[in-house]
Image (tube, rainbow, N blue to C red; front, side, top):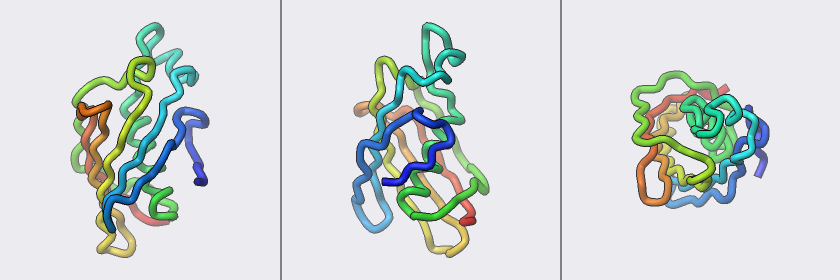
Length: 127
């Protein structure tokens, strides 16, 4: 899989599984040694929320094979902190709505094991 990450080496895509025509599960592994964690936060690393928003965009781009830019985000709810030392494995449940040929709507739930860490709904414009 091609992966044009904004934050090089921040995560690795382990697998993307097509569940149905519009549903996918993406499994990623966070790099606990990435330099971003030196400042967020020293001794107690936490994944910055904006990084998870970027990860979703990159995975959606990978799934659709389209270049995307975020148009709007209707709902972003962080349910728990994501610590790459204790929870490096993340599952992203991604549901796509591609009814409009210029816009992709995405509903996402991020899981750490069985626990919900993040929910978000986003619209992307296709570049």
